[in-house]
Image 1 (cartoon, rainbow, N blue to C red):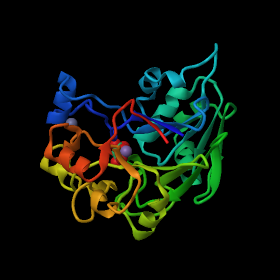
Image 2: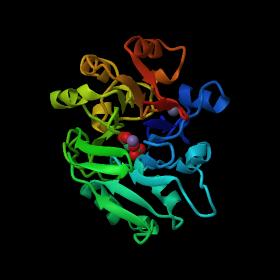
Image 3: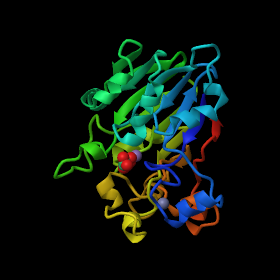
Length: 295
Ligand code: MLT
Ligand code: MN
Ligand code: ZN
C-alpha cells in the first residue's frame, strides 16, 4: 500500500490567508515550508488511486503529484474520493473535480446529505460521479485491492452547519475515521477526533500506520495566540499534549504514528521547537506535503 500526504495542514492551511501568526509569517517568508489542507492519496497497486478528503488545495496538490496526472486526453488515475466529514477543508475540493470525468464518491449518508443540501455540489455531475453511501463498520472496496471501513469517532457537525448549541462529542455519521487494508497491511486516517475513547484505542491495536488529528498542541492555543476564541474541545479536536491528549492516550500503540490536519498555530510545525522534539521523542512524526509511505 502506498500513502501520499497531499496536505498536512488543518482548515485554512499554512499560511492561512488572513493570519499573521509567527508560523504563517514564517511560511510566507520561506522560513517554514507551506502546507496544504488535510488530504491523503492511497493506492494498493500504484496505478489506481483514492483520495481521502478533497481539500480546497486539491488542484495544486494533484499537480505536484505525478501519480495523479491523466495518462491520456481525458483521464484520471483517481478511482474514488472518500470524505471523512462535511467540513469545507474536506469537501470544497470536489468543486475542482467537476469536469465530467467519472470516479466514485464514498461517504456516509449523513455526509452525502451535506453535499445534497448545498446545491453548488450538483456541479459534480451525478451522471458521471457515482455517490455511494457507506454504512459504518462495513467493509467496501476503494479500488481493486484496497478495502476500507468507516467508523464513528467523537466529533461534531460541520462548522458552517452549527446551530445555537453544538454537541462536540457526537458519535455518529458526521465524523468518521477510515481503516485501510490491502490484506497485508493496515492503515488508519483520522483527521478529526474530539477525544480517544477506550473502544477507539482498542480498534487501533492492529494499525501498522496511523494518521491522526494533530490540529492543536493544547486546548487554549487559539485563544492564547490571539487567533481565535474557541478551545480545541469546542472545535471538536483533541490536543496533542496533556494527560487526555493524543500522545498520552495512544502511547501504547505499536503503529507508526503521524500527526496530520495540523492547525497553522501549532508549534509542532517548527523543526526547532521543544514541542516538535517532544512529539518525535514520543515516537510520532509530523506529516509534510509530498511525504510518501509504502507499507
Ligand atoms: C475543523 O476541522 O475544525 C474545520 O476544518 C474548521 C473549518 O472548516 O474551518
Ligand atoms: Mn478541518
Ligand atoms: Zn497562522
